[in-house]
Structures are given as C-alpha cells and as structure tokens.
Image (cartoon, rainbow, N blue to C red):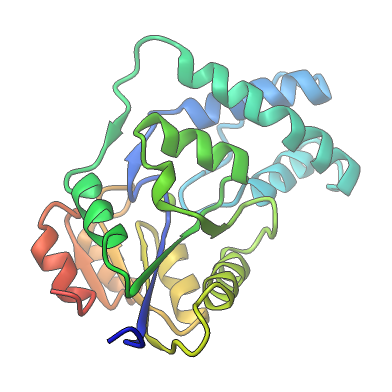
Length: 233
Ligand SMILES: [Mg+2]
C-alpha cells in the first residue's frame, strides 16, 4: 500500500480557485506606469488563460517594443509589490469559489495525491493570491507565468516537477489539469492530462465543452463528484 500509484492534479488559480476582482489587472497597470512610464489601461489585454509573460509581450508590442529579458526582469521584480498593495486595498468582493477549500483540504490529506500549480501568474503573485485565502500551503510545486509565455509549456514544467518529486519507485496512475479556460484544456491535452473545466471563470459550460474538455462542471462545489471524476471517490 505504501507503493500505490500516484495521482497528479494540476490546478490553475484565477477563475478556477478564486477571483480577486481585478486586483491583478490593477497591479499590472500600475507596474507598467512605474517601470516604463506608460499610462496604459491595457483594455486590449485579456487575462483569462493568459500568462504574465505573454501579457507583458502584448503590452510591449502595443508600445512598439519587443519584449527583452532585462525589461521582463525589471517588470516582474516590481509587480509583486504592486500586487501586495492592490490586495491590501479595501473594498472589492474577492471570492474563493464554492467547494475549493474543502476539495484542496481533502486532496492534500491523501498520500497518493500530488498537487501542483499551473498558472499564468509569476510565482510571487500566485503565492500572494493563494495567501489571501490561506490556500498557499497546499501547493509546494508548480510552474509559473514568468517561465514561459505558452501555457502548455508551463503545464509541462509543472508536470515534470511533480514527477521529479515522486518518492522513489512510485508510478503515476493518472494526471489531471483543472482550469477554467480553453487555454487550460489545450494545455492539459498537450501534456496528456485529463482536463476538468469549471465554468466559474469567463467561459460557459457550453464553451468549455466546445473546447474539448474531458469533463465540465459548473464549479467545484460538489466535492464528492469532483473526487469521483479524479478517480479518488
Ligand atoms: Mg484561469
């Protein structure tokens, strides 16, 4: 029994676990002003399923610039401070979605489950967002939005890290990716993971089905149902 195969479950953050109601966007806008001196509301950027590195590339392109590494480093050094400030601002009805806390607590208690993050956020911002709801301790592993502009490649990094962290001799029974956008579904497919899509973000159940999700749920509120989909119920 100590060698039962492991289930790897990768989680997106925004739109899947929680919604910070624009704090991330505000932090981005203020960082662009602070680092590059550009007043830019970045209305032309969609954050859903995007990656911070790709968002920055879109912003640079809108200003006629190519994204170079020194700019990315400067920007991503500045961003977490702005995120911290944006999260500390009063008001805003930031929410954790139904069932998320219960599900993560149940999964974290299972020795045959490995959890990891696949997020477009840079790591420091991902950790700040999770800390808002005291979820950060559930995720030791992950891959992040400063590591690659392509979400599929981020998912690949997260999976590699999860596999590398397995105890010696343990095999993988199954891998899942839980997300809220067609980008998450495509990323799951690219790493051979079963996709579980939730309609808590900006895409409907019908849109997520159309994008080819293996399973679509309105939210993660029915813990028993989610555990069954994960083969753990
Ligand atoms: Mg998302």
